[in-house]
Length: 343
Image (cartoon, rainbow, N blue to C red):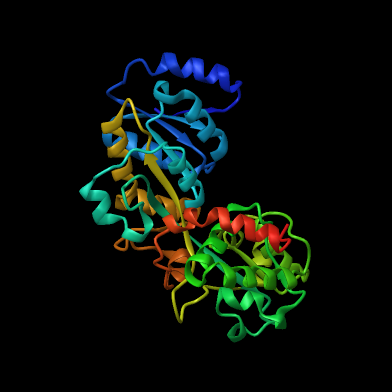
């Protein structure tokens, strides 16, 4: 049975309650700390329980809250698994020594090497592509095929993109550092700033809507925000999606920048065996399909076939840079954003 709790008590009280809760492991239980806030994840937990008989208890909060809680709880933590989005956040957990290394033949076989930590401290289970959107009546799609093109002076005053404190943009810039070096990445970031159509504001959906409304001609957003608009019950959302064209960048060279929804086993997990079974379940065909069907994320397992709208988007080449590099280069990416005044 799925039990969901949200962070509400002061951290000191949470630590005290966790110390009591972690005194003994429960054979048919799994405790998940999750920074993912999607209804679709409940289907994942329910499917795991149905398959294994293991009840899943879920504590939700944002990634920084959960990491702080795990640090304060220490060995007294009841947490078995932490789930979050973006390799940058997984890297932060790694730096706080939160994750235990896992050696699983199933995970190593099913999760591509570039989408998992080199030492098995965390694994990516869903793929999230940073895509470019254009107004096809204002911008020639042949002129903006790479992330590098976003800094082309030709597009001055045309680009909508989120703020620099957004982890998706930090990871995109981290990938530029990994591929081109710090100096070239800074030149690129400065060029994008010069091309801003407006000061960064809102979330990814707002960037797409900015193109649809004419505030800008080019935007950057994760692919699933577009998918949500296309499949929305609201006519205005569907109409906005119809006005933009999606571009998967860098198909002629390294491939599109990808990030992940990922998870790792918490060090000292009281239900470690259940935790490993859960991670292996997330790599199963059943779970991989649920990521795609319910939240429009791409599966990381190649053998999982998509249907309908998601299948129409699935013909793209991914950057195979090991995503642990996105975390390693995150501090320098943040410093670059500050230097180029990307607010």
